[in-house]
Amino acid sequence: MTDLSKVTSEFEARRRETLADDFDFQALREMNRDSDGSALNDQVDLFLDWASALLRRIPKDWKEYSKQPPADLHNLFEETAKLLQSIQSVSSQTTGARGAHLSNLSGRIQGLMAKTVNSNKELLFLQMIGEDRSSEAGILRARLSVSLSNMEKTLNESRANASKLQEMAEASKEATAKIAASGRARVFHNEGKGYEDAARIWLVTTAVLAALLTFLAFAFALGWLLPLAKGADAGQLATHLFSKALILFTLGAALTFSAKQYSANRHNAVQNYHRSSALRTYRALLAATRDEAVHEAILQQAAQAIFSPSDTGYSKHAAQYDQTPIVQLVQGMTKDGTPPA
Image 1 (spheres, one colour):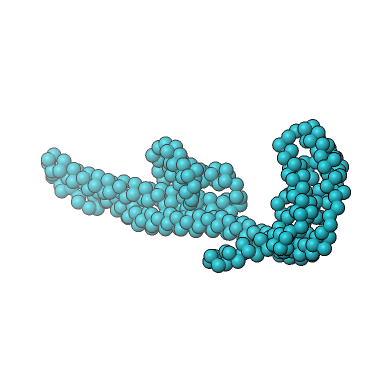
Image 2 (tube, helix red, strand yellow):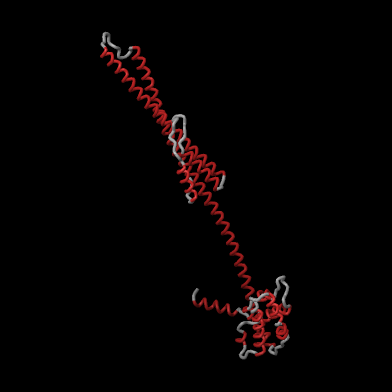
């Protein structure tokens, strides 16, 4: 706001002021109330109504409207203001002290209200100006009331929009968690599929080696392959048997290795499918409730299902380890506000 606008605003504010603006008549009436709401002095209530009606229609700069302000009007306004100040001075006193003080004002109140003035023409002129100012002030108050009502309406709308945005943010957070869970579930599923494909290859290899070992065992036993020459001595017999045993042992070791590889890959495939299912179930369970305590419990169970080894039938002696640190880490992440998924 420029200096000119500020000066203009201050001038307009002063132009609408009346003598009543110096006093809070509602607060003055409260000072004349007992604990049960009754008046301490009925004369004070009458005087406050009389003073409010008088001063509210007298402009604060009333002296500027006359070259020589009437002395009787000056005395009337001054005595009224002093009496109002005297009433105002009891604000910090107890109820009993206020009642005693206000009772002592009855004489001054009656004398002031019965006082007559000679400058009736000037008083009427000033009251006309004051009424005009009061009318302008009433219009301004009405505009202010409308503005406050509009502000309150806008504030309520803003609160409603903020609540909707909060719900949208929570829904977005849940959706992000679900998308992340789905993506990681897909990763585990793809890894499980890769292990399953490798297991098939090792199964075929194991079957081929088993068939070959069986065939060679019968072939060696029945003399179909590498028959023993007639008339062989003990050294040749030992060499012959050692060669066949070495072949069978090598094939047996390869068969054992292939079978273990098949079991290991099938075990990893089942584990990854289990982790994928855990994440998909975790997403579905999250959607069923918004309780944070339930979410944490579900997250702990999902963490245990993902990180805890388990027997699958393909690996009867799965390595066991304490998953407590993992669960504690997940709990710490949820308490710190990190998204769980």
